[in-house]
Length: 308
Image (cartoon, rainbow, N blue to C red; front, side, top):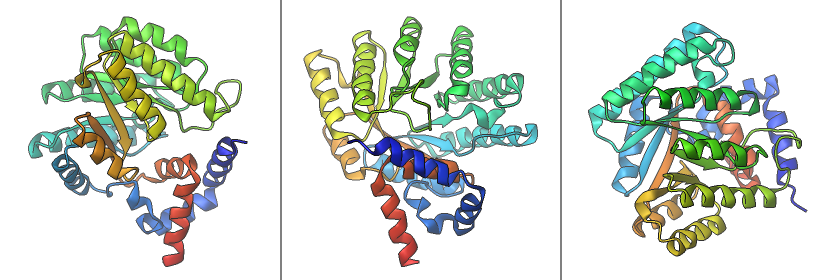
């Protein structure tokens, strides 16, 4: 029996408790978040990126933050991303940026979100950089895809988005995205979703993941396959060989602090490997989703607490 969905549900439910959240954030990085979060400041994160680049690994940087409910905070996040793009340009590291639309006010002001995102995408274009719009939980799926389409229609090609294989709707979504020659990151999905919207069984999520990746690659789309699953990675490598898809047409993405040795090995084999490097003071929601992904992450945190 696959207990992963039940485990994820329990962890995310407990993590959402206000008392648990407050206690965890008081402990801060000592809790073990530093395994998955590259510091709380831009300078700390850039140093991590330099080290990854030296090992042949590309990076996408994420200034953590989501669920913003005040315009002033959304504008602060906008400025943080402009500073991040300046930092990448100044240091010359090989990195692009990834962001969440609820950082930019999507939960309360769509017009503000459109304005802020356009500012960031324009800045990235001027810097010769790329912006990945992350996908959040299903209340924001339609708006995220619409905002992405709008930017592409405005002529901005330096922007991509994310699709989640655990959603039933994904196969239909990619049909529209293929027509746009979209640049997509494919993930399994880490949010708590009801069974009427998402596959409850891991085997179905994995199968849908492979089918989506295959469809995108066969249609010539640049594809970012985000996974730590070695079986899926082996399948991807074999699929690309069989279809004679050049290694320059796709990349394998993994999270900072997860399967580091595998990232380095794939890079040595000539594959494009991109590490997702999050940083910032608003680390708790991201951290809890990493714990929810697999029991091994939970036990890593328990061991840290016992050492403390």
